[in-house]
Length: 242
Figure 1: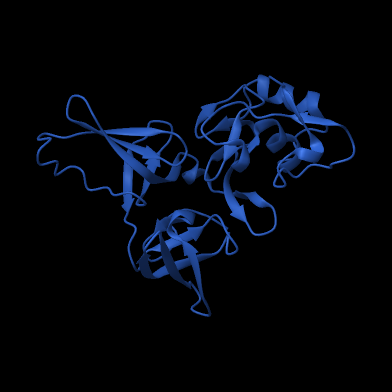
Figure 2: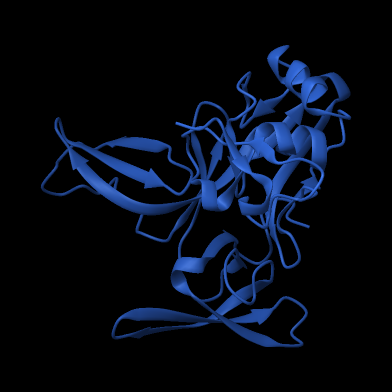
């Protein structure tokens, strides 16, 4: 299997010059698919500007100077994606990966108090042996819920498309934001990608679900597919997004 991809064929959201060289690093299998992620080396070199070339960026990563979601990552091909928290502990700098209307993904600086916090969407649920319910989150992680009575799982208050605010890296749930009208959401795909608004209406139709959102300043309404939004708070975003 090839360890690189041609620059001309690389995803558009990889902010790299296309004609300076033939090849660019290929992301390894991980929590995010290639189509919606960026190799960690490109984050360090091209987005954070911590290195001037491939070799320098790889050395920084190999020395364990970069964290992703609170875990030191030494694989320069590790795929970084939506809502991941990137840390540079030596510089006391931390960033969140968020959607951008221009570049698909961008980094926003976050305060130290948020370096161990992440919002994840519940993409699905699975019942597993032993009376556990497994929550399958958008970034590939799973959280197990122990229920006292599998026939009446009162502990299972989470639904698909709800969001969880969790601590990193131990995955303790600290907040639950249901997918419902009135809650603040972020669009991460489609023509309104990067916009934030309150859910004004959830319209379930045959073959899909359309969500109408009102911009936080109240100046406009816009729509997105339910599969393309992440609930990020109630009255306002729970974490820094922009």
